[in-house]
Length: 354
Ligand SMILES: [Fe+2]
Image: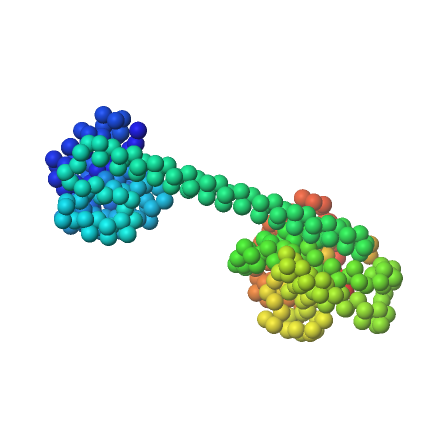
């Protein structure tokens, strides 16, 4: 049983086809011209369309062209032709019709044509469903792969946090805030993803810094600072070699540059610093100020905001700071939810541990 659309400007043809098809269990709908048929096809998915070739206004060929995007993978079309229309019907088949039936037809010819077309419909829909299932499974595999990548990156970050004492969960918090601020600024999905990776792995280069320098309790000597300042380049060398981490390179390499050009390792300034790195720097500063470290207490979010405003135009891109102020209430609420940070004296922001 199939739902069949019959398109013909002659009532006698529409009625004849309906009388011949409905006893076989098919449900027939009719359209009196190509224009009405186009409307019906837009609203309904038919199992089969039987259409006349010669019709006023929109002929069978124009009708086929109009509905092709809608039916080509789901609904076969059989054309009705007069003897003189055969070459026209062949042209229509080239456009996308499945078959043609010559007028006048024997009922067995009609049944054979309909059954062949319905088998074609079954094949088309099987292929469509198979394709959809394949796409769904590929999507699931991509999600699983991304999840595995994320787990790997979180593992890297955890290793880094273990090495650089006192920054537990810093990377994950900064990743989530970078993601929010990146979307606020209008970054697309792929760039947000790169920013997240960069935020998680920004200090991966510290794995090449000797522990004696990295975990030194006191102040670093100028020579030790020279070594510490190599960690962004070390990190960039690591991530740019790995295809799935390559998007993190900009943040990893430039996360200690400053808007005024006084940062490192390349002393980039202004918009020469990649936007992702400029976003990261603001978020990193916020998280550093509002987190407890071995050398300081956690500060209130409002005090962090005050310090970030003060550093707009020196440390930070002023336009990123503006965007940060828009999302600040969300960040402050999340910070307070994690741990209440009592207001204390205004902090003096400094670039922590390189
Ligand atoms: Fe760093």
